[in-house]
Amino acid sequence: MECVFGLVGDGFVIVASDTSAVNSILVHKTNEDKIMKLDSHKFVAASGESGDRVQFTEYIQKNVALYQFRNGIPLTTAAAANFTRGELATALRKNPYMVNILLAGHDKETGPSLYYIDYIATLHKVDKGAFGYGSFFCLSLMDRHYHSGMSVEEAIELVDKCIKEIQSRLVVAPPNFVIKIVDRDGAREYAWRESVKDTPTAQPEALGV
Image (cartoon, rainbow, N blue to C red; front, top):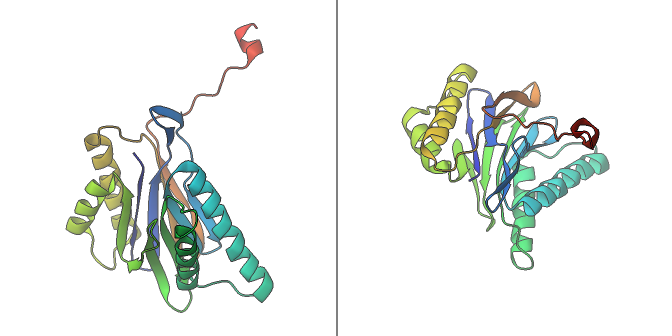
């Protein structure tokens, strides 16, 4: 029951994701960060099969870093999105990655941008987007409340509305979410919304074994 969503505001992009790692009926952990930093001003939020999600986002991250190392300049957000889309399209005809991506970034020349890339390599530049079962609730809320030029406070209020709606309406709702922001000052973590915390596994000696 993954939920990834994001929106573009006035000079920034905010992306939020659930933090549950699940397999079938099992929850393995509730603090899995699904938003990966690509460089100082870009990150990707991904949903999909756990193995594909981790492997593909790491592959994109290392290739973006390699380009900057070889050429001395970073990829723009649009270039990173098109590269990601090209890799998904190539894999689609060989061994497809079951992964959906929201790629967010901020460039000096063009400002903030958000790209929607699905598992069949569809690429769109959007002002707001969402993947997963939570998208049924997020997209309707964003259609109602989103407007261009939102402040950070307004965007966070809308993100919190989406999280609250997911947790109250989705039958198997993820308990925790992470929120990240990218603007001219860089990509960084903004906040966690936690209703369940992972408890550490008891060591054998603590159990008297």
